[in-house]
Length: 410
Ligand code: UDP
Image (cartoon, rainbow, N blue to C red):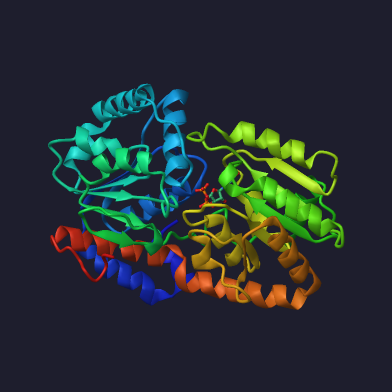
């Protein structure tokens, strides 16, 4: 999608402002590195961010680090540790991690060392910096994870790499860490014109609901997530079972795997076991490119739930709000930036709390409508890609000028 196409959503002035900022960065070589092209929020963002940076005259590219399952088992342990779980890190695991990143560095070094800006997403590729001694540009570590209370052993290990970066970016102030470089706060965003978020014809939404066997006569509550314990799918089923004692509804738990997440299959089995015997619960395992189906599922929902126990941001929340749905969200991390009690949905701390709020909303359809329309406007003002791009450009300009921007830094 070209940048000009977004004028109809965000207005001409926002697009013109981006072009103005980008003139200063014309030709700058920007390399993003993450650990998967499919699945999860980071891939979702890079899919639009890289083409739009190119459309603005920068030379942006997207590299993915490759590894075997033992590497992704270690990086999943990092992920779990950064989100606060005590995890075991053995020397053998660290060796696997470092050897894999060394192999990736051998492949990526020429492009990384020549780049003007390198944006490393999350812990998986963080170690690359120490392996690129001839680097010319500015290196930024972009953390998408809820690191409000990291498990210290994991943080201490990763910090030795992260402290080598010129700056880091977190999604909200609660995640800032003690490091000796500027830290920037940039919230993620969605692409309103992507397959995941664009308007869909109502017959397509109805056909999708029918295809999955959803009844048109009962409300639909949906959680879209990778099958990951931090997303608390079992807690969602518990809430639904409590709700179902008094209100009849349907629950959809839709998710797929991400190639850098080795725990998905195990969690999916737990979810299927918990849902067994309840024909009002639909557990849908979707392919990683099922963007239009997810779009239709979100649009066919009465309420969207995202009952995470830790959450960097929660693009699924943004996606649902953009579709004018009230969201019941776990009272954690970036969900708090988006869900505001009585305005865009409700924050909850337990399955009981979620059940209570679900019942309340289902009994008050006018409140669902009102919160849904507030939610959409809130996303339009705060969580669309043009705001996100503007903050990236501003950050790059600040770093290029060598300004440790105290206005932007925490
Ligand atoms: N997603 C998807 N298919 C799935 C599950 C999730 O396309 O089966 C998408 C979802 O729509 C959202 C992103 O992956 O765009 C998940 O981002 P989020 O920030 O909610 O969570 P993360 O997976 O990054 O922890």
